[in-house]
Image (tube, rainbow, N blue to C red; front, top):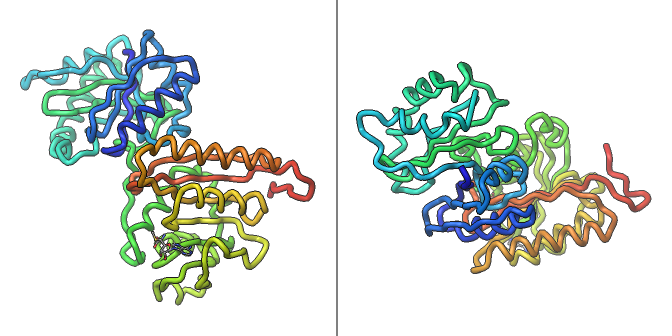
Length: 366
Ligand SMILES: C[S@@+](CC[C@H](N)C(=O)[O-])C[C@H]1O[C@@H](n2cnc3c(N)ncnc32)[C@H](O)[C@@H]1O
C-alpha cells in the first residue's frame, strides 16, 4: 500500500493536496497528489513503497491543517461482488494489518456519498467478523491498536487501509459529533466547542479550561463562543458593537464592551483565554493575536482566519509563519496549531499557546 488518503472538507482538496505534497517533501517523501474537486478527499501516491506507512507514522497528524483524517490505502477495489463483499476487502488487509483495534466503514463528506452511509452501517458487522476470523482485527476493540478504514467512494467501490491510533483523528470520518445546545445564541458555538476537542487534550480541560478563568471574546455577538466559555464557568469580557444574547448577560459572568476589538485592551492582568471570530483580513487578525501574546495579555488564543481568497493554503501558511517568527523574536516559546474544523466553512481555526518566555519577568508556568 503506497498511497495516503486524506479526508477533507469538499472544495478544499487543492489546499489539502498542496499541504501534503509540501509536508511530505520536507520529510523527503516524494509523490503526487490526485485531486478530484469537491470529492472530499485527496490521494497522495508515494513514489517509493512503504513511504505512505512512514508518513502515517511520522508526519504528525495534528500539524495538518486541511486533513480531517490520514490513512494508508491500497488500490481502489471496484465492482465488489454483491453476494460477497467481505472477502475481497479482508483480502486487501491480510498480511498488511494484524490485530487492529477498531473498524470504521466511512464515506466522503459529500451529499452523494451520504446515501451510502446506511449501507456502510449494515456492512460493518459482517466485515468485522470477517476481519476477526483472519486476525486482521483483534477479538476486542482496542483504542491503542491501528484502526482499519474501509472508505466507500461509490456503490461497490472502496479504498481499504489503516491509520495509527496515536497519529490520526479519533473521530468517525474525522468529524466529532457535537450536539447543538438549544440554549446557545448561535450555531458558531460549535466551532469553539470543536476547537476545544481538537486542540486541548481531554485530560487537560480541567486545568486549561478551568472554572473562574477570565477570557476575552473579540467579535463576540450574539455570543456563541462566549456561551462555551460561560458553560465552563469562566468570566467573559465580550467585545462587539452588536447586541449580546440577554440569556448570557443574565448569567452575571459576562461583561459586554461596545468597542473596537482592534483597539480593546485587557481590563485586568489575569486573562487566560483570548478568542476571536471577527470577520477581517487574516493578516490583520493574526497580527492582533500575536500582539496580545507578545505583550503577555493572554496565555492561550483560539481564533479564526477567514479565507475568501484563492490561494488559501499559502495564505494560512504565511500567517502561521509570521506569528511564529514574531513569537520567536520575542523569546516566547509557543505551540501553534491550525485546523480546518468540521464546523469551519471558508476559514480555519488557529490555536496558539504561550509555553514559556525567555524574557525575564515573563515566566508563564503555572
Ligand atoms: C462571525 S460574528 C461572531 C459570532 C460569534 N463568535 C458567535 O459565536 O456568536 C463576527 C462578529 O464580529 C464583530 N466584529 C467585526 N469587526 C469587529 C471589530 N473591529 N470590533 C469588534 N467586533 C467586530 C461583528 O460585529 C460580528 O458580531
